[in-house]
Length: 221
Image 1 (tube, rainbow, N blue to C red):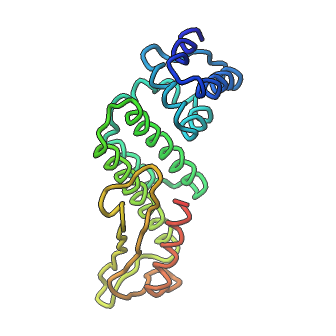
Image 2 (cartoon, rainbow, N blue to C red):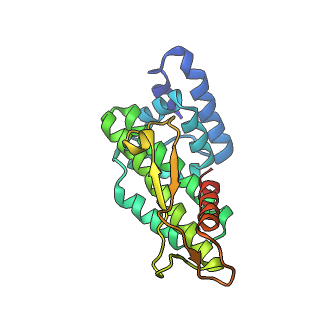
Image 3 (tube, rainbow, N blue to C red):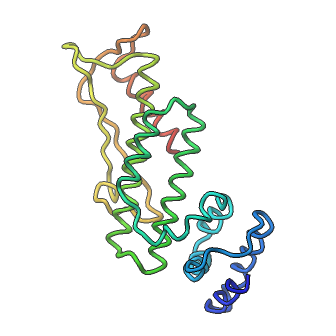
């Protein structure tokens, strides 16, 4: 705890009490009184400026506490792709998928925030990382929801038997790969032509993709 107290003295006086209380809660809730050497200064700064970081770390300390040193490195696209593939292939229920999406999002955003506060990331890196996160979580949700829908209603095909694609346009900052920490994600859902589902209960293109859109929004909400 002494090392943490030394780092607290580097903060402006007005910020010290809140961060000190955070360490007290950490000790009370997780029995932890110190963090790995080499990350204390950055941890204290992140806690001082972000309520999101405070809440996420307290809630997920058993998972994230041992990974703080990893946050000095930029999150890679491979991690996003692997997670999206895992979600897309999962047979878990929608409640568990929502939880997994949320926890991954919080962990990833914490890593991006950590590098931003530490001064390790250029602005372009932060905007791209957050945009890629949204893009891959959307991809994971669409592929998972599509598999669930196909199990009930089959695939949607046109008059020639060709599959009708589901198209999602990212508007605004997502479309420009410029999402920041507080950006909304604006999406437009489209399908290029009508068709019918191949399952026992036939749905039109409008019905099919309305259900798919609602499922995707519910997963990401």
